[in-house]
Amino acid sequence: MSISVQNLVKKYGSLTVVHGVSFDVAKGEFLSLLGPSGCGKTTSLRCIAGLEESNGGVIKIEDQIVSAPEQGIMTPPHERQIGMVFQSYAIWPHMTVGQNVGFPLSIRKLPKAQVEKEVDEALEIVGLRPLKDRHPSQLSGGQQQRVALARAIVGKPKVLLFDEPLSNLDAKLRESTRSEIRRLQRELDVAAVYVTHDQEEALSMSDRVIVMNQGHIMQEGTPKDLYRKPANRFVGDFVGRASFIDVTRNGESWATQDGTPLKVAGAKMAEATGGRHQAMLRPEAVELVEGGATPLANGEEINLVPGTIGESHYLGAYTEYLVKAAGASIKVHSLADLAPGSPVTLRFNRLDTRLVAVPE
Image (cartoon, rainbow, N blue to C red):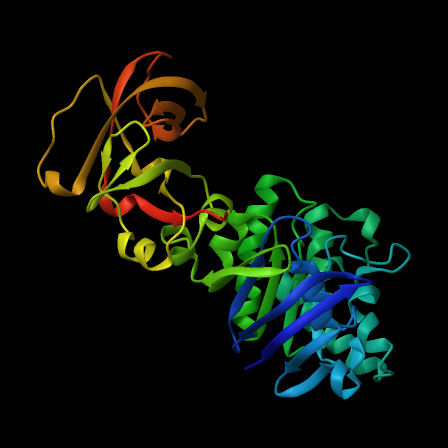
C-alpha cells in the first residue's frame, strides 16, 4: 500500500476530532474523504502530510512509518515524499511561476540545472510552460491552481494530497480542473487522497470514497455503492439528493405512516440490524404520472403511490417537484409541466426503494 492509516486519533486538548480512523490507499488509487465541515477529513489529511501531530495510531507511506506517537516517531513533512495542493493555492506572489514550482527543489539544495529541468517538465505536464516567467498576479484562478499542481508534482512524490483545491473556482472551471487533476494523477500513477465536502467532486473523480462524520467513518466504498446502497440515513442524505419516507413493519411487508404498502430493497439487512429505518428514494428513480395510474407489467416489483404536487423548481434540464405523498415530501425530477396542487401517481421500482438505518 502507498498509504496506510491505522487507528488514527487526533485530539485538541480534551476534544477528540478523529476517532480511531483506519484506511489504506493503493498505488494509483484515487481516494476521497467526503463529509461536512468539522467531520475530521482535513485533520486526517494533515496528519498524513505531517502538518498535524496525531495522538494515536500509525501512518505509513510506502511501508515506511512516518507517524507513530506511541513509538516516538514523527517524520517532518519534507521527508515524507508527498505533494500537496492547498485550498488557498499557497503560491508566493513575489515569485514567478517557475520559481514557485521550483521552490520545493531549491530548499533541498538541488543543482540549479536539475531544478530548471524538473520545473520545465512539471509545467509541461500542466500546460503552463509558456507562462514560466509570469507572476501569480498575471494569472487567472485556474492557472494559479495549475501552478499549485505543478509544484505538488515537481519532486516526483510517492503520494498526492489535495485539501479542497477547487473551492475557490467557479462552477465551469471546477469541472474542467477536476478532469485535469484526475488525468494528472493517472499519468503519474501515484496514490491520491482528496478532501472535499462536494459530493459531485467525490463521485466523479474517485475510485473509492470514505464518508466521514464527527470524526468517524460512516461508510466507504465505490461511488456507485455509496450512492445506490448507503448504509444509513446520513450517507444517503449527504451523497446525492434523496427523499426519505417513514416506514413500519406490516407483517412480512413494509408500509408508510398512512398505511400505503411499499415494496423495498434491503429488508433482510434491516431485520438483521434492527432499530428504526426509512425508505430512501433518489429523485431520478421516480416516474411522475399525471392523475391516476394502473399497475404496469412486472407489477410485483413496482410501487404506485398517489400524491399531490407541492412546490416546483425549474432547473433547465428538468423540473424538480416536491410531491406530497406517503406522509412525506418526495423529490422527483421530471420533464412534465405540472401546476401545484395537481394530482399525480409516483411510480418507482422496489430495487430503487432502499431501506436505510436512522440513528436513534
